[in-house]
Image 1 (cartoon, rainbow, N blue to C red):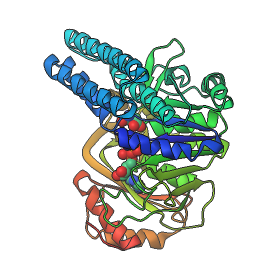
Image 2: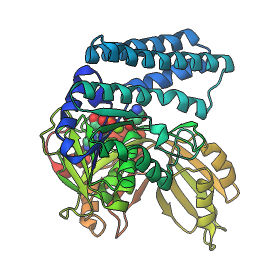
Image 3: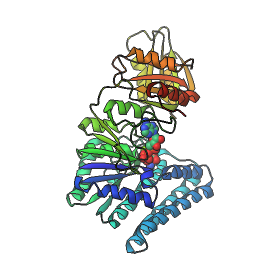
Amino acid sequence: MIIAKFGGTSVADAAAIRRTGEIVRGRLGRSPVIVVSALAGTTNALLAAAEKAASGQLAAALEHVSQLRDRHLETISELLGSGREASALCEETSMMFDELAHLAEALSVLGFATLRSMDAVASMGERLSAPMCAAAFSRMGIPSVAVDSRRVMLTDDDFGRAAPMPAEIAAAAREHLLPIVAAGQVPVVGGFVGATTSGITTTLGRGGSDYSAALFGAALDAEAIEIWTDVDGMLTADPRVVQGAQLIEHIRFDEAAELASFGAKVLHPSTIAPAVERDIPVYVFNSIRPHATGTRITRDASPCTVRAIAGKRGVVVVRVGSPTMLGTPGALRSIFEVFDRFRISVDVVATSEVSVSLTVDDDPSLLKAVEDLRGFGEVVIERDRGIVALVGAGLGGSSPSMARALRAIGDERLHMVSLSSTGINLTLIVDDAQVHPVMRMLHQEFFGGATG
Ligand code: ADP
Ligand code: ASP
Ligand code: MG
């Protein structure tokens, strides 16, 4: 069995959905389970509608809803024509849009949106796309069945970034997905969306469909997890930032995970962990060029000093200074416990006897965490920072690469630097506005080619 996940651009419209159907057809011999994202741009539009509704702009919110409704209904009629199947799906789709309009009205009455209600809204995209894709594939002669992801993707209730429950997901996947595969049909599940065991809708966080695919892959012990997207695979840098970024044909799990967590949006940062646990290879393919090589991500790949460069903007540096306390045993643990308590993940750390500096994403609970940190000493917050990471399994022992990287960026202002002898990345904390220029300088240095 394989899991194949198709991102938003791979199901953006009728033509893309048909193209995706052909890719699925080519995989029928491998018992595919299909995971789909919302139609490109839908999740953003849904969230914008919810925000408008909650801030009292109900008319604008309903306008978004009506545009989305038209787009989905038009896509259905392009895919299915006007027969009985088409009208059943249009009815189901319209009912979901009625539900969405009611949600918008409720938000505008309340005047605020909770994370739970945002999840109810954000989930709509995948709840709409899965039945559409299943119907389209069936129409193409690929017997397909839509499965509501809320029956299989069981999570805790940390709305907006719910944590999956692997044992429950494995049991539910065996119950709801395997029989469909065993009957020679193709299950089509929405990514990103889950539910608590009491049935309340949750989401895994933006870009979470990749993570859904990996979790289903681990749950079903798949032989491969395929991520189909709009670029040829994992590249040596984000092609939107660096012209001339090159395909990486083979990369290690840990390298791919580092790149994803330092901003390579092609994979959700949590995607690799479930694959590593079961040693399942992950592939990244381009749904517009389905026969191109793509990227293979496995435990081992040929050694390489610098595999790729990633960058992440909007990072916050937190510095905690205390001449008396930091040298004492347990001080660092207590500081990290604060971040743990607020579920804020720390990316990069640098310590001395008198201060610790660390980077976090700009999280809504950061200010509360900072209040607690003040118990340890003086706390300074620096916003408008970014991370640039050079990633490669051979980097740790390679101080020449570090020297080369620092030379290449000339007199760029560096706020923190981190490289460990066993690590696989060199991370540089720079001004937010310099993330892209620094990525281009480093790419030019290590990979050559055009920069732009
Ligand atoms: P999907 O909707 O298919 O999930 P995403 O937009 O989430 O697609 O991810 C694909 C995008 O990731 C690419 O279009 C590219 O701009 C961006 N990206 C960032 N870093 C990389 C990288 N190192 N390699 C490939 N793509 C990258
Ligand atoms: N549709 C969701 C998002 O835009 C999940 C995904 O596409 O992976 O964040
Ligand atoms: Mg994505």
